[in-house]
Image 1 (tube, rainbow, N blue to C red):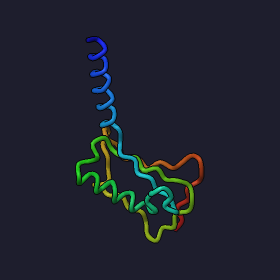
Image 2 (cartoon, helix red, strand yellow):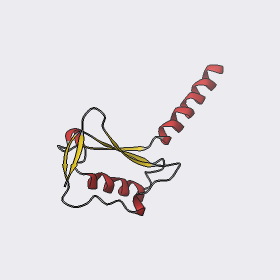
Image 3 (cartoon, rainbow, N blue to C red):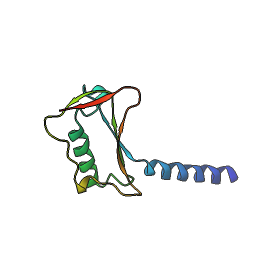
Image 4 (cartoon, rainbow, N blue to C red):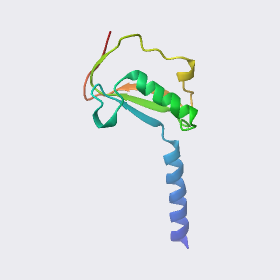
Amino acid sequence: MQKTLFTLASTLLLSSLACAAPLVVHVSPDGADGAHTTLEAARDAIRAARADGRLGEGAEVRIHGGDYALRAPFLLQEQDSGTADAPIRYIADTADTARLLG
């Protein structure tokens, strides 16, 4: 009985932790491993996730190393904001240098 209760409690805890994870979006200049190739595409993916109700705990955009040629300024608007409980963060990969050129 105790083992069953422990298993049930563990399952519920892990399920709640899985739901609490932010959406992770990857950006890579060459699109490696299915990553988006532009910051705009990553931003638009977050917008779509918000519209579909999949952005409950925020998002993290991981910008992998390489050169990103910008043809125009990268714009974030009010709709791209997170909240204190569900932030939206753009984070450069620490393994390599990401450069925004334009």
